[in-house]
Length: 508
Image 1 (cartoon, rainbow, N blue to C red):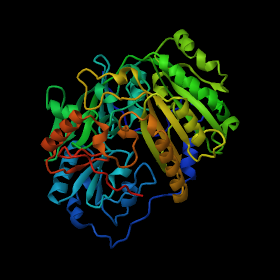
Image 2: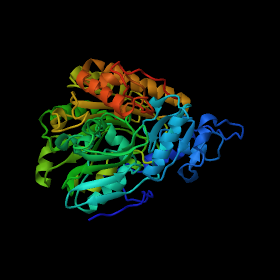
Image 3: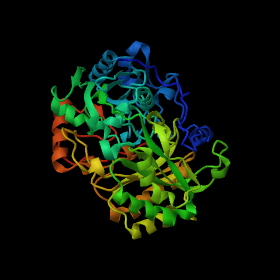
Image 4: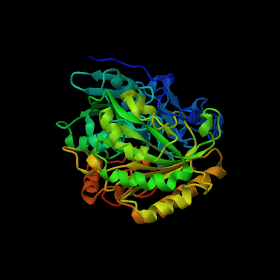
């Protein structure tokens, strides 16, 4: 059976076991508008003027009244100023924009929400194609395959699958676009048992550099299909993704919370516990500094905490047994219980509206006592850290094994993914937060394992360092065949040659 959905309206209920679910809205409401107005009637459209009239008029050029809203990235620290922003309603309109941009000598960058936009750098010669008007999911329950239009957000897919007792391999944020998340890999709450989301993809529809509307799968354009699964957004504008969903009606999921003064015992215990945890367990641990806003329950408002959250794909008895060692540490709050699959979209309390933030990330191997001590010395209790969160996500399991018939990304070398983020309502706080996040990554460098996870990487990096040499060479060959003129820009680009990827200047 198939069902179509409209775009999410923001009224979906939050997970009952996400105790701080209101903080993100309050923080976003309290931050300043970081997008500078550029509605001067004298602003020149240049070559992009050739795009006027496309997308049924949904084209915004510098100086247009709608340009500032259309160009805004999800991260409000990023001030992107493209040559034009186009909002196509269907794949045919995407193709029209791609052909017109190429004819005008402009490049093309696809965005849904504009997550992870900073590495794109200067967009003055680029047309941003916003796929946010192309939304909806359809579900083949019997075949366990879901189709998502190119601009669909994860919450729509998660809720529709949940109504049918199924689950998709979504991430921790309900507000991220399915296409971008999946192109970059897709690390979610079932990852240690079921792997990355990109390897559950069964087909991709996209517009290529010559304006062709193409459907690729394992039997049609298999090399391009391989590259799209984890190789990023360098190969075209994705207009639909089809992927497997799994018979997971619920899991034993939730969060445990302690005061951050307990971090010296909680963090080492969690790391030790992870060594023996079965693949059915995927969790994260965070050093949190919560803002003093009324939306957060009074017992935790404005406090520094340490929290473990995640999902266990076991029955309640087995789940409780697996968590017994962590519960023995006496958390102030423990919400782990039987949880519907749709509720996991809100579990991690990621912001669900655009917000200004700065961040850094790295992949870690085992973190010994010296690494724990160094982490707590910079971000633990009493340090006065401005970071909202310093987080370790559990890897291993299926993430350590190449997926059968997998794409360009199916494994991580490390045991943990580290991510540090600060809310940045002012340039001064942004500078301090960035310095602290980057400082933590530098401190943990002795324990690094492989390149960073590009979906978490909010600044330009040498993309070639994130893949082994054979994978990188293959990605470059696919790029050269699919987009020989390098029309498409991605936040973490694959070039048309095997030379190391160049770092491009990020916007500020």
